[in-house]
Length: 150
Image (tube, rainbow, N blue to C red; front, side):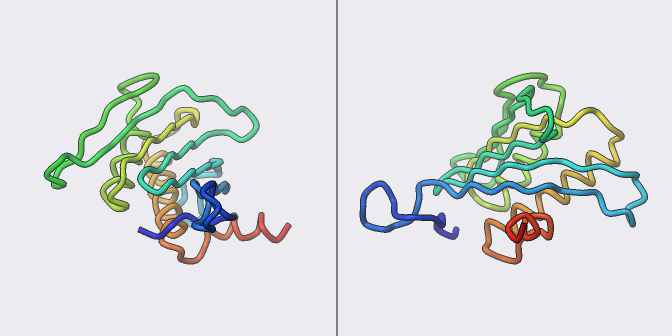
């Protein structure tokens, strides 16, 4: 996986920062026909782990947290609820998707109000794609790029 980007590391050797912190707002595209919606996303990508917080920027809370890791054989995923409702599965879904794509353990805290399953799944897909683009040093999400310009 790509090395974290940033300023000189703590070791003084200029290897990069210990974590790459990114924030962006993910909007639901109108063409999905699911109504309006947005989610604020904070991603902290470390060399061997990723933390993702999804929620409302105006009311930041941490109600649910899920952890996913590949098994020793690397073929299966194991996941658990670290905090909150074990039946609130969207954080678990995102942590599993990202873990399988990035090949590192992922912690995801999903804190959006309940909405329709279609809307939650659309958010999960969009956020997962955006994080994969960022992590793979591809084009940043348009909202993230707009925030950097402003």
